[in-house]
Length: 177
Image (cartoon, rainbow, N blue to C red; front, side):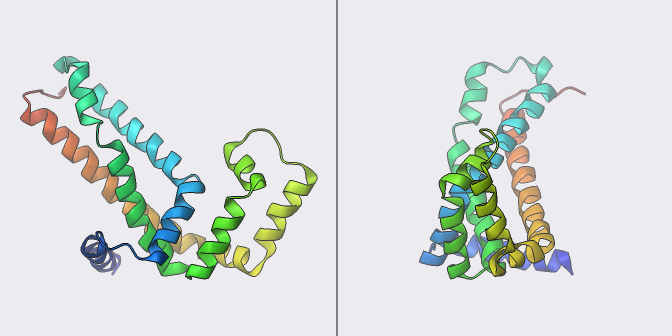
């Protein structure tokens, strides 16, 4: 059943990829400030670390690695666009806008950047949000949303790895056995 859902979900995502409405843009804006881009940027870089280890003996020049990494921003935008469909499935546009406002606050940005501990007031702000109806909904939806995000992430990382590996092999580089 999950495979069917994922197939339909990704088909819809791909067919709607070029069409970004206000609701989806609001979700993308939210994902741009809640740490999602940073998380996937790290995942992108880590994938290259793994790939470089697999091609360690192939003497791939630095210029080739740089060429392969040129699409990083586009790749991150693509995964965020797909992730926006998962959020859309679970939250209304109004809820997303509220989440954006909360996560765009100085307190939430400080919490995300881990630049020290929050003040009592800051902790109280964050706690009040998570005790609100929306905060409780976020917590209740977390397992389903996490599952959707995991599936999207797995497809994105697998496709990205496969594309980069294929590019290297087609260029004549052989991975370690």
